[in-house]
Length: 363
Image 1 (cartoon, rainbow, N blue to C red):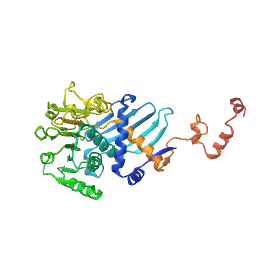
Image 2 (image 1 turned 90 degrees about the vertical axis):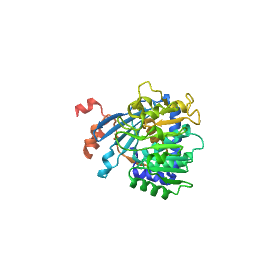
Image 3 (image 1 turned 120 degrees about the vertical axis):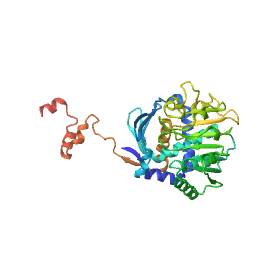
Image 4 (image 1 turned 180 degrees about the horizontal axis):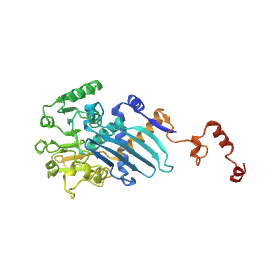
């Protein structure tokens, strides 16, 4: 039997802990795993692209546990009543190869993406940051808002989306949460939204080389949290932002980000810093208050590994446990065919289990 967490179980966990506390705990798990970066066997995700979207597998292992995530990205889905992104994942025991947990990761991916964004900003944004522009007010926006409010003390959100209904949805959901001290400003444009912001988060969904932010919008000292550019041919930042002499770019896994991130627009010798190097103290994060820091986030398998182990731990702690027969349980592990036998035949086979080959042949 394998532990299973569906949407209902994850909802129960979030109702007990609260989304802010859940993301805070998850951010700590992710940070701890980044600290042991060399322990992981890493690879870029395997992606199958089509004209309308992408389906990806994201594997990783630390030698004790293995995990993978299945995830899609189909921006046109919402026109037909489907989500742009959905996902599920598996956590397995390396020693036996047996799965330990099968879990939904659609809701959890939104939580881990926001937790990762806030964690990176804790390391890279200027101290005392209080204002964030949030460009793109779709499915990920509430999670980003809650994470930055809880983990960084953001008190002003400056919102913009070309779809005003998405912005209205975001405001309704945030007001229902009653986040203390949070002010909301609805901007007339992207340029209006980023004016005076300490942090700028872009989380748009269009699968194209978009230019959401342009160089003249960027002020010294800003931290840019570029989340939406996460596959080949999908970007949000004008390349001249990355070329700024006062800008430094940070990525999760350079090999993957070169293909999928904002830096796909840059030459192969363009310098970036992996986030794990900052956490481990091998490379500096922000060096001056005036520096522009860019977290070129595409989402990496380590973050899903952390999320699955976190869910597995919470499942045991909270007593939320459903199991499914994903893997057969056999009396004789070499006799898989026994699963096809009728009950009376199975009883006869069990009675014969300890007879020798010679005895069975004679019979």
